[in-house]
Length: 144
Image 1 (cartoon, rainbow, N blue to C red):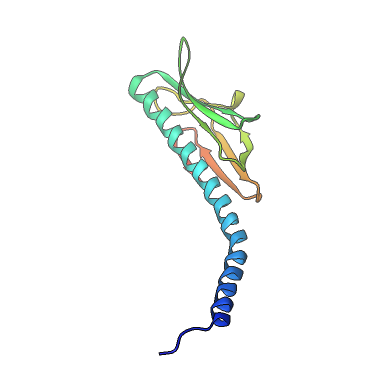
Image 2: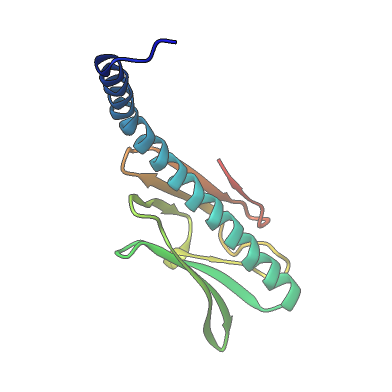
């Protein structure tokens, strides 16, 4: 039985290192896309949470977007004053590109599950990839 020589082993290790080095940029680019999609899905989930609580409790809930640093949003219960229910900071490298259609960057649900104002929230990552979260007048929310 013949074993590998030292040179053959070093060549094999060199090829593996080269392939791994070439794969790192592709992995980073994919990670940016995953972070963008994850933040969009989390926002979608939290919008649905606010809508569900508004209908269930017959009390106004809203999602407040903070477009300055730190980039985040809060789920708030509005009854007398605003009570913080949940806060989510956007992943590093993800930011708000546009929050069109909403007064004061607030997505406010009515007790029927509809929204006071409809619009679209666009998230962007550092690779200039974007994803939209659309809020229809009926309260229907989807990621595009």
